Structure formats: structure tokens, C-alpha cells
Image (cartoon, rainbow, N blue to C red; front, top):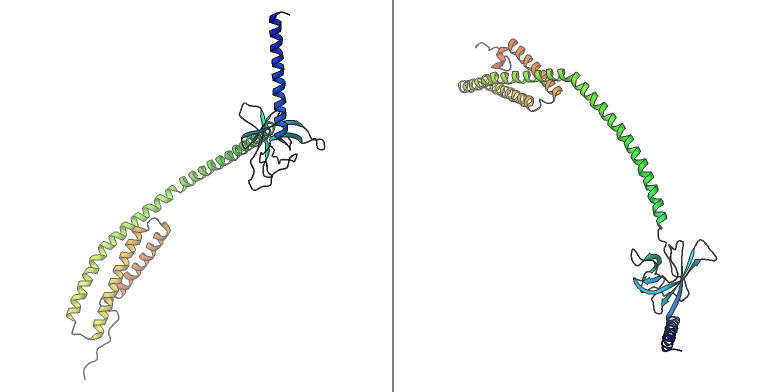
Length: 302
């Protein structure tokens, strides 16, 4: 045997011994420190034996087997081997996940609660299903169909609303065009009545002022007359003052409430009737400006 052959044989033998030693030590280590658990899922998502198991985000073991459950083939039985001392408890939840976006599937186990009882070896870890891509696609398809139907319905309702609004606008325009001349005439009449009321107040104001001066002069002149005459003059002064206040109120009402067409017209009509009655009364009894009642005939002295 040549020297090169001897060296090659020695190298191969050394590699074989090193590999065997490593496998032996690894098996001895894992067989003595790992604890087996089980969990069940309806969808494994490509999970295979050798996939990592993360406990609270930390690698704590590996998946040892993935297979359908014998008693219930609708569920997938997943066997895992976790490092001894991993605090898996009854509040821990196992679910399908991955270490990163591009990595292979992994089994994620949550930390649960500190006061929860620990799960015994070979017992079941509670699980939670993860939504698959097919389910997500199905839900998106349903949402899309519903959205299309809703959009079609909304378009129809918006079309109906738009048509109703257009018909309402046409009706309003027609009514406005028909009633515009009437509204303009009423506004002109109200403006004319307001101007007449202002003119009337301007004319009556001096008359009432002169009447007040006259009453004051008469009061001074007849201060020595009998008490009934003084009372009549006082009542006449009060009546004239009330008439002045009434006319001032009428003017204020006309100016401040001109937008109330019906009320203003009615108030002006009533005021006109009252003024007409006052005029007729003055024509029939002009002496009522001085006295409120006819004095009795004086008796001749004996």
C-alpha cells in the first residue's frame, strides 16, 4: 500500500469516528434532557418533523412527528420534544407560525401564566387554530361579492334620490315662478302701508303735542273750577297719551314684523278700523276732545 493510500484511509477512519462520537453524544444529551408533549391542529400548514418549537419566542425544542390522529382524522397530531425545565403550563397555547417571513413553518407555544399548573410529560398542550391562506382568500371573495352588491344597491338608491331631488327642484321652481308676482305685490302693499303709517304718525305727532300743550294751559286756567272738570281733563290727557303710545306701537310693529305678511296686514287692517271709528266718533261728538261726558245743565239760582 502506498503512503497516499494509507493517509487517505486514516483520514476517512478519523471522520467516521468523529461523526459517530458526535451522534452518540447528541443522542445521549437529547434523550436524557428532552420532554415529549402533544398538541392537535386542524391545519398543519406544511409543518414537518424537525421544525423548531418556540416557547415565548425562544427555541425550546423541535417537532418530532406530524401525522393525522388515529381516532379523529380531521385533526393533525403533532409530537414535540422540549428541553427539560421548559415551563409549559395549562394556560400555554400552541399554534402554527414561523420564525420569520421567509422561514419554514414553526410551532409557537405561549408562556401562559405563572400560577397555572404545569403540563405533565406526554400530555396535551392546548392549541389554537390559525387562519389558512385558503380561508383568507375565501373570506376576501365573500367580502368582494358583498361589496359589489352593496355598491350596486347604493348606486340605485343614489339614482333614485337624485331623481327625487331634481323633481323637487323643478316643483319648487314652478311654484316660485307662479307665486312670484303675488309675493311682489304683497311686498309692495306692505311697503306702501308702512309709508302711510309713517306719514300718519308724522301728522298725528304734532296734533298730540299741541293737545298736550292745550291741556296743560287749560289745567292752569281752570285750576279754580270744579273738581269734575279737572278730572275730565285729566282723563282726556291720559286717553290722548294712550293713543300716542298705541300709534307708536303700531309703527314699531310694522317696522319690526314686516316679514310676517299675514300678521302685519291684519294688524294694519285693525288699526285702520280703529282710526275710522275714532274719526266717526269725533265727527259725531267733537266736544269729546275737551270733555269725556256731557255736563249737566246748570240750575238757575233761586
